[in-house]
Length: 326
Image (cartoon, rainbow, N blue to C red):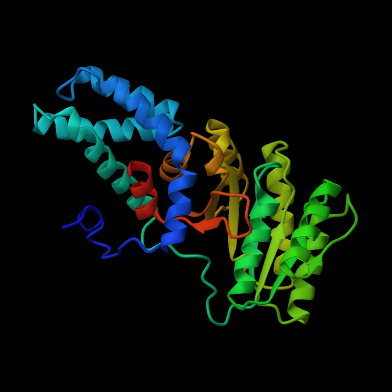
């Protein structure tokens, strides 16, 4: 039985990326993989079995790879349990054991097969509110999502509710023009909730399938953030009940532990339903995906591994682990 069949047998799922997507993922994780395994090789040099010193070194490697302290301790505990059962566990087996434990950890949070946003029948428009600080790739992620939805045959409307910066409105307009979808906007400094309201009204009038709302990207105090996002939600619900259908938090994977702090702030401020982790191709901090997924128990739906319009990929836990340990 193959590795994936063993680890994910209960789900009866196989890796499902295309060959090109898999190659892109492999390339995107090159820096993370090279950094991690160079450290791991040094940690086990001269060692024939997994002992306390190897485990201490492994703990340091995982933390320095931005997996996060709590998740690292969880992984170490699992490996310790296996070592206790087999006193002579060799260091040559450590790679495969790590692979299995990380895969198992991701499986617990990201259950089921990798999927893009699924638009239920009868839900129209389907509203996605996108949150995240400036510079994480939030607006770019919105543009790439809009491209994917339009390519799939959906009618999409964007809402420029990040009115704090004129550049944010302009950037969203550039993406809207590039993708060929309408964007609803007002002047810089306008009430974000007013923009969201207008966007949903426009979407309903156009019989649009999907609405993506960009929101302010500044991390002001938690109370202020909560009030602003709550107001945007309430105003949208005056037009379409039970919206937004999803709240997507965009995090910059290259910031490592800062991404954890951002996730903490936004999950405290609003009900985040899914995550997108961007810029993984330019960093050795790809381990942050493992830690954030585990610690916040929120599924990672997308990862960004390139600048191109098609370089936003549905997060596939099977393929992520395979690329990480390939």
